Length: 127
Image (cartoon, rainbow, N blue to C red):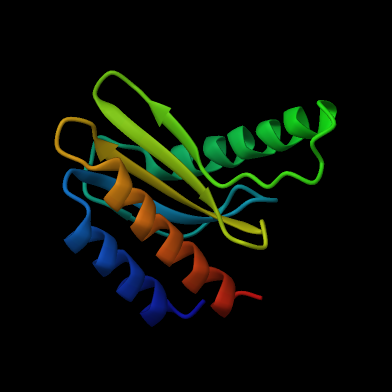
């Protein structure tokens, strides 16, 4: 994905998600962020990106072990005391969009809609 397209997608997230702390586009296999935007300097977006790719891989292993190989993961939502973390796989599963928000000021529906939009843009550019 070109730098300009990622910046446009991140701009969409920054403008559309109240309470946005950070967003990244991550290659699932390596756990490396292709690009990220961090609005909370105390938040380690690189570590979060890497570890949340492992969360997605673990969930894939779990669903497959339960005989659900044909099921696709639409979204993983992790609610913490003060934050929401969304892991949105791209449609082809090679990338994920990771978003962290402040729980008290964000809207999960809006955040998910924007995460889906970013994920589709990522897949279109990074086939």
